[in-house]
Amino acid sequence: MAALRLHRWVPFSRANGPGYRAVIWVQGCTLGCPGCGNPATHPRKGGYLIEPRALVEKIASYSRQIEGVTISGGEPLQQKKPLLEFLGLLRTQTNLSVILFTGYSWAEVIKMREKRTLFSLIDVIIAGRYDQGQRLAKDLQGSANKTFHFLTRRYSQRDFQDILPAEILITSQGEIVFTGIDPLGLSDCSKAR
Image (cartoon, rainbow, N blue to C red; front, side, top):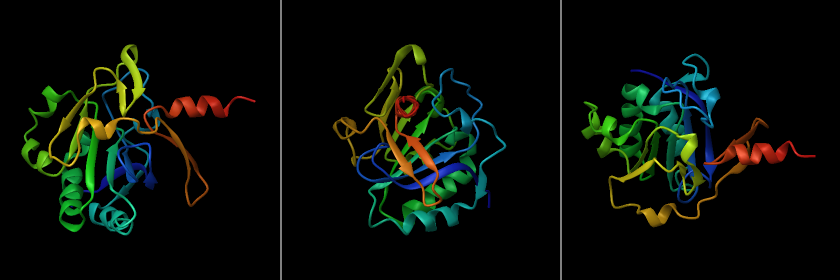
């Protein structure tokens, strides 16, 4: 059983997809998109390891209060084995929706050996490297080249309109987390005096 390397997770967010969602940020990404909003998630070392079953148990304890799970990073598809184990357990033990952000292009994703299993466990994939020259930061689309792929009928493009661009969360440990598609906009505002 492989463990997921996480940067962090939060049980409730309104800025990472339709409805209230748990959000998981994996640790580790080698894609190196200039201007990425999550550079702290890039180093492979860092974050912490968690067994997929333990993470599903944590999230399942909130399943009556949330609509789904959003997985971001780092790069989730650089941890395919534990990610697929996590998604399989989540799908069999809950009715939560799954949105996955990846920096890989759709053409790269559909060439992956595990694509059939992956597609059976996810509702929406938002694919493509962040391109700061095409920055949008709106409706969960960081840059205009990012593409949405609806793998089930659970959501449509309409469900991704008017999602909060950013939010500030305070964890149970008192940590302040800036999140959403435009968290830097909030962090810039927090520096104003």
